Length: 187
Image 1 (cartoon, rainbow, N blue to C red):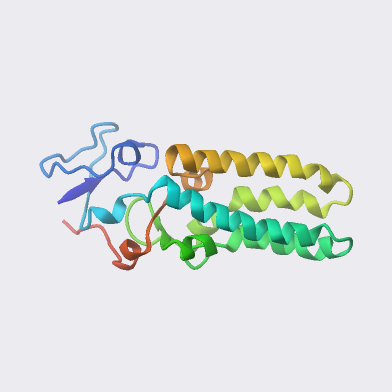
Image 2 (image 1 turned 60 degrees about the vertical axis):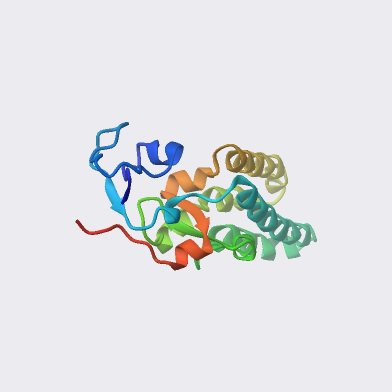
């Protein structure tokens, strides 16, 4: 039986994966009681390449919307749609890019992610689009958007986790694993 640390402040499970030692009751890093999990594969994050691939697909979709948004007048209509896309793209458990690559979002502590977690994890992207609604000032937002997108992409490449994952306490796993509906084992 494998275990994980569910302390959101502790990154032991993220850095080392699941704890395979069944005799260990407390996290070696923070001392919190470990939570037993039924499926070891269920809490292993997907590869950086698959995460980045899904992120790239989602970025391309948003970029096409942004291109349409540069058309005068249309931009005022499409900008809220872009913000909603970034905010709600994972509402069903996976963005279009994640769905195409067979990925899904789950709660870091085990089990399905909540709707609120899936919205919260995309807040950095949705917020960066809102200045586009302000005439003239919105045009200066493009460098900020590019910076946020690059930082998030770099985070995925380096840590397999976006800032949004850290905010919401989520992780991305294979869709097959998420479908198994793994849950913490009752003691």
